[in-house]
Amino acid sequence: MEQSFLAYLRGRTRHLPQVDVGIGDDAAVIQTDGNSIIACTDQIIEGVDFDLNECELADVGYKAMAINLSDIAAMGAAPQSALVTLALPRENATRIAGEVYEGILEAAEPFGVAIAGGDLSTYEGPLSISITILGKVDSGKPWLRSGAREGDVVLASGSFGGSIRGRHLRPTPRVELATQVRRLADVHAAIDVSDGLSLDLDRMCAKSGVGIELDTDAIPIHPDAIALADETGRTAFQHAWSDGEDFELLLAVSPDDADRLRTETLAAPLTAIGKIVGRTGLWQKQDGKYVRLSPQGYMH
Amino acid sequence: MEQSFLAYLRGRTRHLPQVDVGIGDDAAVIQTDGNSIIACTDQIIEGVDFDLNECELADVGYKAMAINLSDIAAMGAAPQSALVTLALPRENATRIAGEVYEGILEAAEPFGVAIAGGDLSTYEGPLSISITILGKVDSGKPWLRSGAREGDVVLASGSFGGSIRGRHLRPTPRVELATQVRRLADVHAAIDVSDGLSLDLDRMCAKSGVGIELDTDAIPIHPDAIALADETGRTAFQHAWSDGEDFELLLAVSPDDADRLRTETLAAPLTAIGKIVGRTGLWQKQDGKYVRLSPQGYMH
Image (cartoon, rainbow over the protein chains, first blue to last red):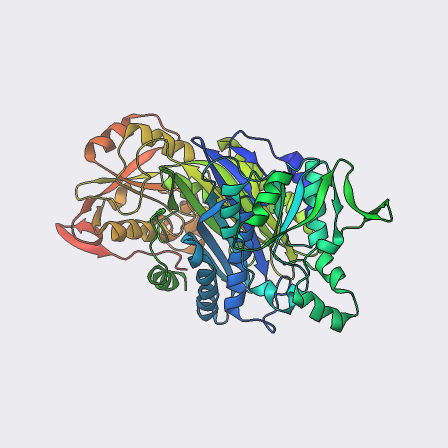
C-alpha cells in the first residue's frame, strides 16, 4: 500500500516553508533558522521485517539503526542523534529491550550518534522498533534522488545480491563513504539500495526524470549472490539485480567527478555501472540496440 | 518497566555534546550549529492507549499528534515539523491510515506543523502510531523539569480530572499558551500533565531537587471530574489529583512573574496551586502542620 498511500498523502498535506524535501525521498530536509536538518525514520517489525528464529535481538537493534543511518548517508549527511521507540511484547519486555538496545548502540557508536530520547511501550503484539535519526550537512545541499542529469555517471558502492545470507542484518551504513565523497565531488543525485538495486536505481531515475544506460557486466556481484544462486537456481546477476537490503549507495556524478572518485581510496569501492540518458527507464545496449530492462525488487 | 529501564539506559548511553538534554525530560534538546532543536517522540497503541470501540480513528490520530505537541509546549518550544510512523493491521490498512491521518492533520494544522516524512507498515498486530515532532525556541533556553527554585510559584493551566470522559482524546495542546508565557515570564521549570497532576508535579519537583507546599483548595477541578465522581464514588479532587491525560502545563516561576501572568489574558487560564519549598515532596499545611501527600497517577 505504501506508494499509493504516499501519493494520497502528498496531495493531502500542505506544503509548508520549513520543509524543503518532504515525503518521498530517503529523508526529509527541514529548515530551522537557516540550517538544514536531515531527518529520517524507519520502523522494522517482527514477522514482517525480521524473524526472531533466524536472528538475535541485538541483530535486530543493529539493523534498525543501520538502515536509518543508510538513509542519512544517502542524503550526504552526517548523523547526529536518534530517537528510539520500541513496542515490546509484554513477556520479557525488559530483557528484550536491553538486548535490542545493545545492537542499537553498537550500530550508533562508530558514528558518534547520541540517543537523545524515545519511547517504550509494552503490548500484545510483535517486537517493533522505530528509529528517527537527525543529521546535518556541513556545507552545500543535501543529496536528493531528483538531481541526476544526462551524461552523469552512476557509481555504486560495494557489491550486490544475496544479503539474505546474513549481511542484511549487519549492513555497514555508508556514512563514512558519504562524508568522503561529499568532500571530493558534487553529487547530483543519490539513493541507498534497500528494496533492490534495479528498483532503487529506477526510483532515482524516475525522480530525476531521466533514464540510465547500464553496463550490466560492470555491476559488482557479491559472493553471497553467487552462493545463493547455487541454492536457488537463479543467476547471481538476478540476485544482485533484485534482492535488495544491500544498503549500498548509488550516486550520479559528472564524468570528471566519477574519474576522480575512482582514483581515491575510500571507505568502500565505487564502480561505474552506467550513464544517465534522457529517455526514462533502465536500458542496456545489446548488439547495437537498446533493450529495456525491468526493475525488480521488494515492493511495499 | 519504563522508569527502571530508562535508568539503565541513561547509564548505558554515552553523553555526547550534541545532546544538551536527553532521556528523561518531556523532549530532547539537540544542538546543531549553535541552534537548539527540541525533539520528542511518543507512540500510542490500540489496546494499551486507546480502544477503538470507544473512539474514532481520527480521534486516535488527533491524540497521537496532540500529546507530542503538548510535550513540545512543555519545553516552551514552538513545533515545526513531524515524522509520522504507522503500524497498521493488514485488514483495511489504507482506510485506517487515511482516517488516522485526518486526525493527525487536524491536530497539526492550527500550529502550522508540517508532516515532513514518516514510515508505514502493515502487520499482524494492533494499530500503532508513533510521532516525532521537531520544534525550536525563538530565543533563550528551553524549559526543563529541573529548574524550579525555592520560593517559586507553581502555576497550572486549565483544570484537572475526569479527562477519560472524552477530553483525553481531543486535548488542546498548550502550544499557544507556552508561546505567550515565554514572552512574558522567565519560566524556571515546566512539565505537562500526562500521567496525573500529582505524579507529574512530583516529577518536576524531584528533577529540581525541591518540594512544593500545595494550596490544594486552589487546584482547578474540571467539571468532568465532578461528573465522574458521581459515578465512581471517589471525590472530584481525587480525580483531579490523579487521573492524568489533562495535557495542561505546570510552570514554576518567580512570585513577580506569577503575579504578572495572572493579570494577562492568555490562551488558557493560569492558577497558582502552590509554592516551591526546599524540602522534597508534596506538602500541605493542615492546622499549622505539614502533611505529606502521595503522588498518584499512571505509572508506566
